[in-house]
Length: 94
Image 1 (tube, rainbow, N blue to C red):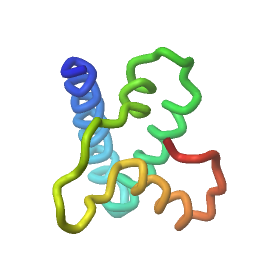
Image 2: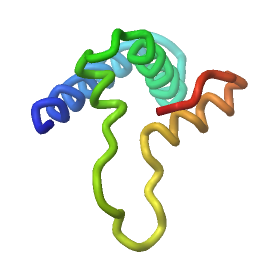
Image 3: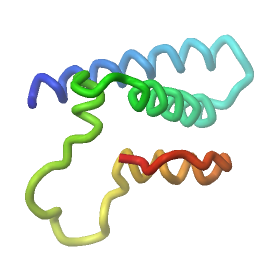
Image 4: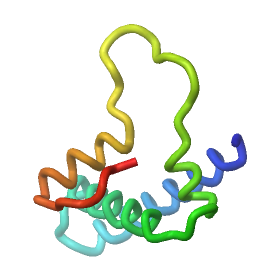
């Protein structure tokens, strides 16, 4: 699973580099670009075949409990908020 996490991190870094280039070349705000890229990545992974590594990483849920305190916003919860804010009514975010 460590390899899968490393691959996912590498993909996110690559996407952020693309976003930085796009933002420097246009008048779009950085935050809007990141939100758009996140939604596009989510859609791309959802259309992938079962068994593909990015899809498996997105579905993976860690075992055990979180530490006490304020719950952290997960990536999937952030995507759910973005979809609601843009009026996108999609399938359940996994």
